[in-house]
Image (cartoon, rainbow, N blue to C red; front, side, top):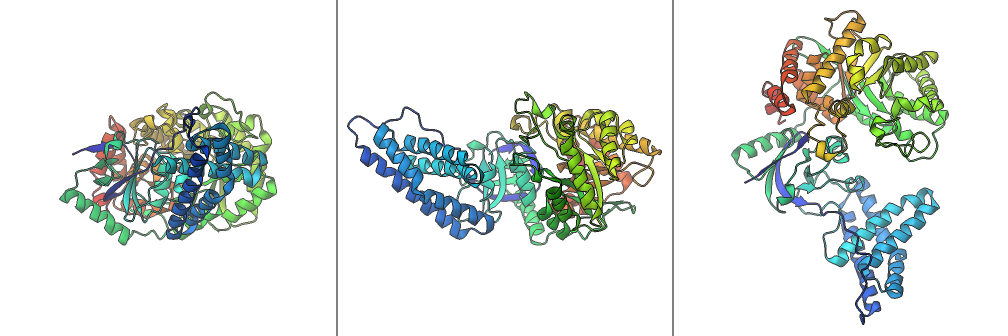
Length: 572
């Protein structure tokens, strides 16, 4: 009987049998050649048979899939049927006497390099070639194909981590929970799980010891996987299943606390398609509009007119509602060739986000011009904020650019400890702040948020992080002229737009610390509203005090959750 503990990233409790995702296919030894006297024709014939088997397996899966997953599987099957890769590999067996496995691997490199040199759409297919290459090599070896396992019954997926390509074929009707040994709370796996509402745990060391087919209990709120499945576990899983059958709803208008206070609940979005989902979920507006989607995967920045059109498409969906636009957050894990230096030794602490405007001023000013023009064409209440602000000088510079364009309100993201501890002075120079708990956590704890081995540090329940949230809110009240105010006109508004806002228990703590709006993935809105509706401001402040006074992140989380019986009632 074993329990494995990792980092909780998406709440929910389920029981299911384990299916383990195959590890990445390893490269065959470059020196792999067929034995002297072996028939190269016979060896090369294995390649066509393996490619045909891969195509057939992918086609069968595509027939059972829907939507984007079906399109991805069909495209991959077509790539497996393309003779280019197989013929190139067969030639290498004949000319260099390579084994079939090595020949396929080497041919894949050649074909992918050729496609990349063509650029555009063809370059994008290079990754597909390498995917098919790995599948053919696995077939030749008799190994499990890479990617998410194909199973008839719903299962708990165990993996080292998920690559972005893997998620395209993830069927939430089949995968009922995700548990990985690597990754962190901001990994692609964690973000996907929250978007889909799947219970998920990351950085759970030792799960490779769990045998395929083992029945397990996954608690996404506690961050545990256990092979002990008794009456209590079945009761908890049943409560979660009931919530899925009869989900909570959110009708907008903010979360109403027991004493009459209201906390607006907003959505995090990355474009017009996400905006539509936020509208459908009755979000009270947008607390974080990520604008990077316009800039990624291109060699040059988009023009002002192109940006204006994209921003207008979002603003039009929220007439009369707040839409907080974050200016481009490039660098670190989102480098742009026209904006970032390729050789920065530590890009997370380098010239990223607002700092890129120090050397490439026009990228930021063009974006602000586009935002101002789009806002003028719609009835949305457009707010604009800059990420990666560290000093009062940063604030003055950014706000000055906004004022020149009649953009108001103009604010900042609080992601660095320096901005948090000088919030009174920073907010005296701008109109509002939004706390990005993802980056604030990584910088406070000096822990790269993309590194799975540091996932336990990248936890927004860390008392040090919560203390800085409190310091920001205190600074906002001082800047607003009333140190005792909660929200309202007497304090500069402070929101939270990091993933922490979508954790219902942590949302209570954030409100208790003085945060007056919360922004999250639309799926989290109902649960956050439900839990907030069971407390008053004074109760939230008391629970915030417990969390900040705790000695560890786990102690803080457990102390607060123990005081919120509603979590048990709604299966969280």
